[in-house]
Image (cartoon, rainbow, N blue to C red; front, side):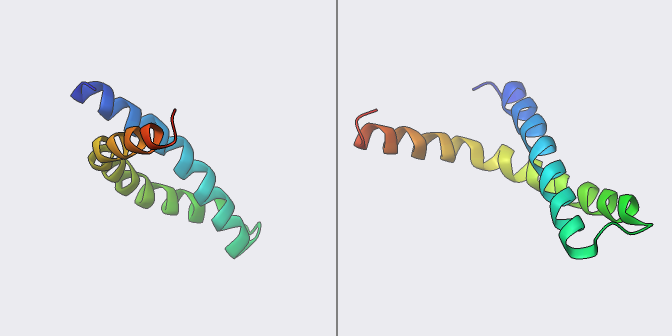
Length: 75
């Protein structure tokens, strides 16, 4: 996968995943308080770059592992 395509995929995929996870975890931990959006946004903007960088770096290994598993199960 080209470097730019890998970057875009990691950015988009993690943006959506982190959005949902931080939203749900913030709600579960804090409830719907007056400062909920501020607390959620803080969690999101801390977590998203970490997730995006991790996905970008791990993606080639994950792709190889997926290919290996698929070969072993006959896919």
